[in-house]
Structure formats: C-alpha cells, structure tokens
Image: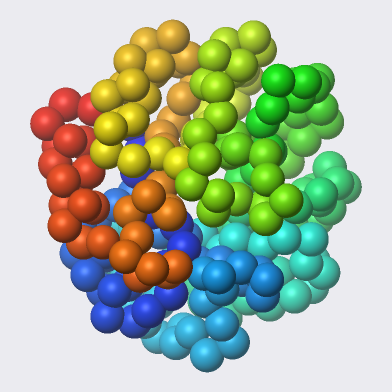
Length: 211
C-alpha cells in the first residue's frame, strides 16, 4: 500500500520527509490553506527530490492554465484536484499530467458521480467532507466506501493517525482498489511542519507489513 504525505511547506522539513522515501509528497497551491506552499517555494528543492517519490500539486478550483504552469515549474508528477472541478476540467488537465480527483465523503454521497470522472483520473482520493477542502483532522466512516463497486485505485484521507493505520490495513482486504493513505494534519507540529518522530513510526509500520 502507498504512503502519501501531504501539506509540505518548509525546505528543511521537505528534505527530512524525503529521506523517509514516502511514495508521494504533496504541495498545496491553494492560497486559503494554512499549508499553502506559497509563491516562494523553491522549485529546485522540489526538483531535487528522489525520482522514486512522486510529486503532487494540490489545487482547488484554480484556472487550468495556472495549474499547468505550476506543473511545469515544479516538475510535478500528478495534480490533486480538491474543489468542484468538472469532468471536462479534469480531461483538460489529464492531457498533460496524471490526475487525482478528491471527493468529500458523507452518508449521502452519490458514488454515481464518479463515473463521469473515470476516464480522466489516475486515482480518486476519498476525504472527509469539509468546507476547508481537507486538512480537518476528522475521519469519515470508511464503511461508506463498501457501498460502491470501485473501478480505479483510490487513496483515503481525513484524520488518519498512527492509531488508524492498522484499521486501514484491515480495510484493504475488503476494498481491493484501496491504493494507499494520504496523511497530513495528524502528523504535524504546526500547519505544514511535519512531526518527524511520528512519521518515522508510521513508515516503520509500512515497513513491518502494511502492503
């Protein structure tokens, strides 16, 4: 199973997290986020990450031309679309870079919506529905995911901490398309500053048998 660490912001912290070799690292380019990477994020730092670590840019309803400019500037491998982006928008972006489309999950979520996005997404991300487009530290009811027959790989996010990792591993046996977890706020000392000791424990759990 894949590990995605999102909300990276500070240069030295970026280097420290990269040394753990997660599968994906996420950089938020949404100005309203407390984890906004900022206009001054050094492209050289992002570009120097090991090639095995996939670099993800996170956007919320941004103009497509701006997204693609940032993809080129930072040599991003994927973009994560966390707003109300349409299937047509995803089609435009997916012509240039792989897309992760995020959806806020709740009891009345209509999984039929996913079918319209299917041709244009490499992954889905199922997160807790919030007005802040993620980063809430709250977990949604994962049993909701069992109600749908999934057709492409997906990540789950939303308040996943060390105590939930074993539950995620068990969930994998029931949801074969579960590709990995997206962690953020539960592994922070402050917004954008990741807790290295906690992340080392998480990485150890992956190394010890989470597949």
